Length: 152
Ligand code: DAT
Ligand code: MG
Image (cartoon, rainbow, N blue to C red):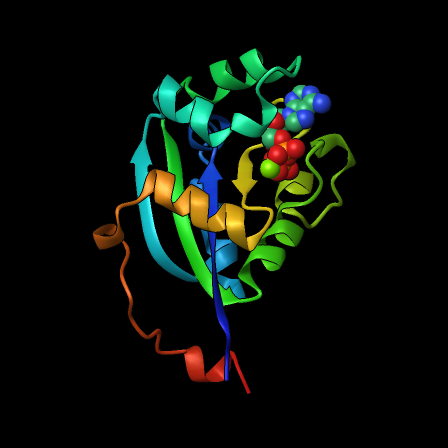
């Protein structure tokens, strides 16, 4: 039986502007990760600061704030076995210049400052980030018809 894990993904403003949303979401769906929540929003500065609190004071913090609040983003909650680590692997390295081909950053991005996607780096941050972007009643629990074929 599957031990389902939840993770948070943010498709950043460059993903929306460059028309990459569908192709990225398709990869998660095809992998077998279940969409529990998804919405388009523009991140207010206050939320951006809370979300990236761990980076406050760093040299790239202000450029990061400007980037993430610059236009609409797509916030997503995914569920599946090992979802946190699976999504991190699918994303590739933070610096897209070093990300392996076949990963999302390795296929769709070139730099660390416009790296298209965020994914939670652990179960605790997933919980925190889901709570920042979604109310409980905005997430849907349901059975996907292919679930029996994704687990043994
Ligand atoms: P990740 O997004 O892979 O979890 P992170 O949490 O360390 O990486 O950093 C969050 C974002 O901040 C990252 O996606 C891009 C930006 N960033 C991180 N380190 C940076 C750096 N050294 N220079 C510029 N931007 C950076
Ligand atoms: Mg991170």
